[in-house]
Image 1 (cartoon, rainbow, N blue to C red):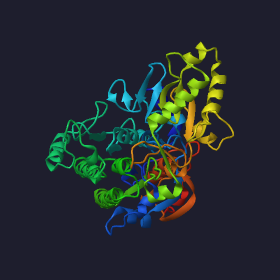
Image 2 (cartoon, rainbow, N blue to C red; image 1 turned 90 degrees about the horizontal axis):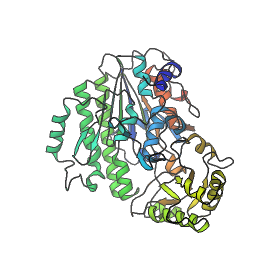
Image 3 (tube, helix red, strand yellow; image 1 turned 135 degrees about the vertical axis):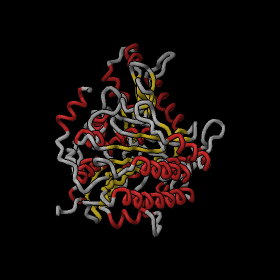
Image 4 (tube, rainbow, N blue to C red; image 1 turned 120 degrees about the horizontal axis):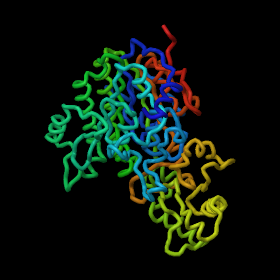
Length: 482
């Protein structure tokens, strides 16, 4: 066992016995869901209304890290920790030794897996406490399933756009029933492959999450989820809303259709899991990030949102550095993963520049570029983003500088879609709801964070999962003991 996992088992997990009345814990993450989306659809048999009326709804929940992207957002939810602890500093980052970008889900031994995920996770804590416990994770994206499922998931499945089917990696067990399910999915033609991949217009539509709903139904039936020998944990990450937002925007008919479909799916899922567990379930619902309204959206127009092209903006940053410190036949920015900027240390040395002094001067210079709120060293003090920068910093993976986009600036060149990634409220604020057995229903308007989810859901499951720095056990969501 790796040393950090052994230490996690000994130091982090002071665990009580799993509560006998809760057989099923559930994490639902909706990729790119803003808090108000819970009100965008109100079907009589939908899940959104049930969550609002029967759940503990935290109205001021937000992510505390930078960037607000899919991988670090899921990691905050699954670990209750910041990137400084869990190590997932972005969807991708730059490996200075290899001189190449690295995907957060790359795994040297298995191709795709949790190799880069550090520190404790709620799923791993449950497995460490009870050998009979089972963990299942499903998503439209590999990082959604892997990060929520942790290192010891019994099953982790995600959608392969090139094959038009759900898959896993050799790190995990491939369920025997998956091949037959995929054959049936292809027969239904929800997400058919064309020109070697499922077309974007089908991925950016309700069909994406509807396919995942079919997978969940099959998983629950085949694996008897909620009826295992110990407690089960089911982690679900719906990816469709993110693809619709990136492609079409937020205040459009396509998003209305997506949210109406997701509302119906959530309602079916709640009923399915209530039946499977005999009603003994506790559920947490949140999102990995929000999104800025596109300039074409009505609220985007009202805010004066400005759209910038990612590539062109990166070139502006490069030219700004080159004008001040010309480098012959070399680039200053080795990798642009805004907010992470990875700079050319050898280039600085070739000009006789002391590295840390150069970084401070480069940050000040780049802060004057239009479209940026500021550029900072990761340990910068006295800025509105200092706490988020420090908690998001991993010395081996984070950028040399952190570039924060100005408020109401969208770094996404393709109209009419939108994006996310900043610490501003439209990207950082997300829904946070607890629902089910042991939950006290009501609205909580106090500040809260997505890192609160893991310790609170853990308590509902009977697992003492200590809150990390900046996180809290949300006692407001807990019903009084009987």
